[in-house]
Length: 357
Ligand code: ATP
Image (cartoon, rainbow, N blue to C red; front, side):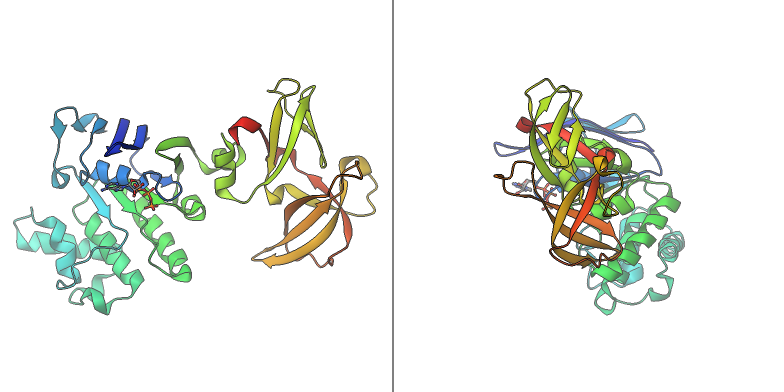
């Protein structure tokens, strides 16, 4: 089933929380709502589920309006599964009873049990039917909550920060399992997260939100390599920023000229590039025209890479050196104070008007 949101706006009191959100999620697709705390992600999820009343706009499932002007289908009739951030398992019910909870509309006891056991089997929790939530680990509780959401066979499944209460190592494993379970279910899934790495791992498509607006949506490659705004560029990783002025379609920077074709002469711009856009060039460099020299001020080993803090001197000796961070794959053994040649990958360099920063 396809989930279609059209022009959804929402207010709490006089404060606008969502501003004309439109979105379409296809069957089998995992879409992540990503954005900083308070940007309205959870409110949007609650509106889709019916837990929060829709104020403006329209929600349809397969062209059938479930919420809109004069229409408000109750949550239990929307065919939407919801996995809450804290899992919301009932402590006095065992795993089987918790999973059966969303199946109250099934009168036949045997059928109800077999649907619940089937959902628990899909998440690998079939051996824990009589166990209570407090006897389970966080990861096992998450899987029971997922089974409960999947048991009625929803065509749409909503997940609100489903991994946030798990520790880092468990999170990596559980989110991998969850992704496969979601994909096997074929449901259209909408997941809320404020963690870009989690969104990158889970999503077929990312919807980046800020202050109630959609900033940009698309697959990860589009958002990462073609960010629409400085906010979008900076949300996925640290970015280095250089200020400059456009002259004949270029900005002169300490790292060399950067194309700025869409800007007029004298436009003030900021040039953004990720730490991995810088690479080291052998020094002495036979082709000095394509590189600049930089001094290492500090290095820090990260998983799989070294973050190298660099100071680049400008041609104007009165100017303070420009400091940038480079993320170099592997271990960089050169010491603080060492001078090396670096080059900038222009395909990972983004120019925005200074007004938009
Ligand atoms: P987080 O990642 O921190 O959960 P979020 O992006 O999911 O944030 P929401 O929970 O949707 O954000 O909240 C958006 C804004 O709406 C916040 O400013 C929040 O304080 C406010 N808000 C949420 N629920 C209510 C409510 N019931 N009444 C009044 N304001 C609310």
